[in-house]
Amino acid sequence: MHSGITNPIDFSLDGRQAGNVTIPFSIDRSPYYQIRVPILRLKNGEGPRVLLMAGNHGDEYEGELHLGRLMRLLDVSKLHGAVTILPLANLPAVMAAKRCSPFDGGNLNRAFPGDPTGTPTARLAYFLEEQLFPAHDVVFDLHAGGTSMAHLPCTLVERQGDAARFERSVELMRAMGASHAFIADNGPAAPTSMGAAARAGAIGLSGEFGGGGTVTPQTMAFAAAAIDRLLIALGVLETPVLSRIPVPAPGALQLLSLSRHSQGIYAERRGWFEPAVALGATVAAGDLAGWYHDLERLDQTEESLRFAEGGIVISHRLHCDSQAGDCLIQVAEPISG
Ligand SMILES: [Zn+2]
Image (cartoon, rainbow, N blue to C red; front, side, top):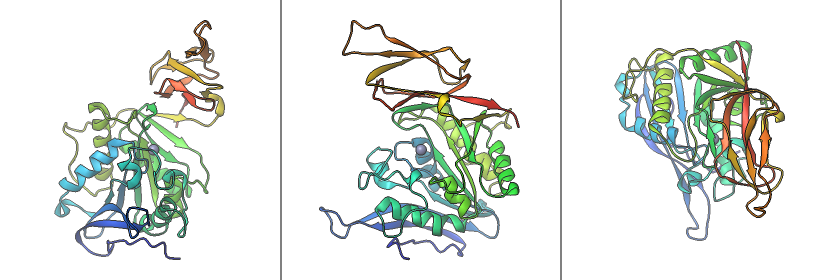
């Protein structure tokens, strides 16, 4: 079925092709409006075919800024193989500085495999899984914690595909050089880009490169090194393009597991959260995680929140003001392997 999406790229052609993937969406201001998602394709002979994407969630910026920069810097004559860059995937969400699209509320990373007759986010997911991802060997989708969350910078893969493909994905994740990494178990039907990449026959790689709806010199350097190292490890590039400092060889990698509800602390009512520990801290079960204040009942002592499980603190909520159901803080379990 046709999704109404137009794709300007011919994946068989060598050289540079730039344009927009367009998603028709009729709105009050513009009956024949098109959502225009920028895309760049560079191909130089045979070799690995890599898709670099960001803006899956609009308010996660390391990938968006770096992939925009990479579009300007990458020289097709220096490549071996093909690189496709989609820096602002869910464009309406990026332009609204939101996680989800303001047109349909769509969270692209929960929308796969998509729907060719659905909302713009559903049609985009369908196009990615059915057309764009299958034209690539590797899909690298860059994420961060978003406006409401601080996240320990880490790389990430899902346990997907056959053993050989999963092993290769872990090998490439190690090559990206993070000090922490996740292996997520979301199952073959996962509504995520990593699930979609697996169903499309590609190796999926991801990461949480920062958070808070902003970037820092440290998170940008980490993301630059990860992109450069991946392209070099695949043999697509010989030298780094984005890193401003020489990229050192990857150091030791701590693998992490996040698989149980009990690894997080969730708000049970309206309140104001004060964390007691920093990202990356090692904690034990029973340790103080933070305090939960009630600004509407100032006579009440703030509640002490304690971890149910030990591990490494990997994320916490940034907005103090919280409601029942909000995840306040999470610990991941260090694993070997
Ligand atoms: Zn994200």
